[in-house]
Length: 344
Image (cartoon, rainbow, N blue to C red; front, side, top):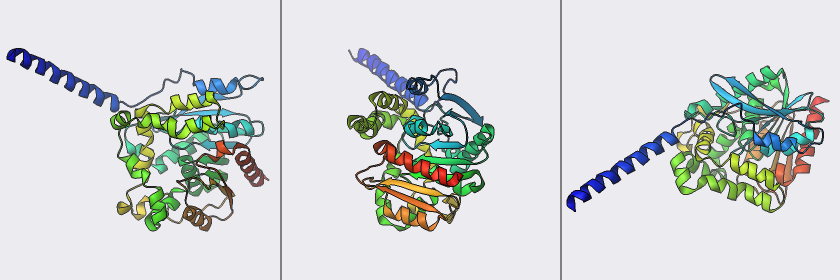
C-alpha cells in the first residue's frame, strides 16, 4: 500500500505540474486572428441593410502589430475608437447613422476584438498606438479626420487630437477625459482617485486570475447584459459583444492599455503625461457624459475646459457609462452637429 501510495502521489504531482505548465503556456500565448476568417459582427451588421453589404473589414499592419478595422460609406473620414472592455461593434449605431454622409471607420484597438494582442505592455503605449493610427490614416488617404471615442477610446481620441492637431478636424469624447487630464486629476483630487481606484485592481490581474475569478464573465453581466435587458441593445448584438469580450487572455491583453499608460499615483512623474501635461485641444471638440456614470467626475470636465479652445459639453441625466447606447439618438445628433460645424 505504501509503495502504491508513493506511485499514486508521484502521478498526482506529475498531473499537477503538467496542468500548471499547460496553464502557463495558455496564458503566455500571444493571440493572433486569422485574417481569412470573417468577422461575424460585420456579417450581422450587413444583414440589416436591404441594399446588401454596406460594411467591409480589413487589416493594417504597422511596426509588427496588426489592427483590424471595419469601414463603410464615402467622403470625409469619421474614425471611431472603442473603450474597455469592448470592440468596434459597440459604436456601430453611430457608424450606421453616419455612413450615408461620411466614410466611417472603426478599429479594434490593440488587444481587443480581432486585432493582435501582444503580451508586452510597452506595445500599448499611447505614443506607439497613435503612430499606428496615423499610419492607418495615411493608408486610407485621410489627411484630416473626425474622431469619436468612448471610454479608453475617448482618452485615445483626445490624445491623438492633442498630439496631431493637423490631422484632426473635430473630436468627440464620450465618458472619459484625455490622459493628461486624467493623470492631473488623479494626482490632485481625492474624488477622482476614488472613482479610478479600479484601475490598480485591473493592472494586477492576469489571464489565469481572470479565468479563476470569472472576470471575463462579468464583462457580460456587468456591462452588456443590463443594456440588453433594458432594450437598449439588441440581443443579437449583445451575444456578439459577449463572444468578442469573453476571452480571459484577450481581456488581460486589453488591460495593457492601463498598465502602459496609467502609473500608480505615488509613481507619477512628468514623463507620464501624454502628449504633455498642458497639451490643448485646438479644434472643435465636445465631451458627452452621463450624470450617473460612476467613472466620470466633474473635475475632469473642468480641467478639460481649461485645455480646450472650442469645447462643447453634453451632460445627459439618468445616463450611465454608455451614452452612445443608452441615449443613441441624442449622442448621434451631437456628433453629427459637431462634424457639420467643423466641416462648414
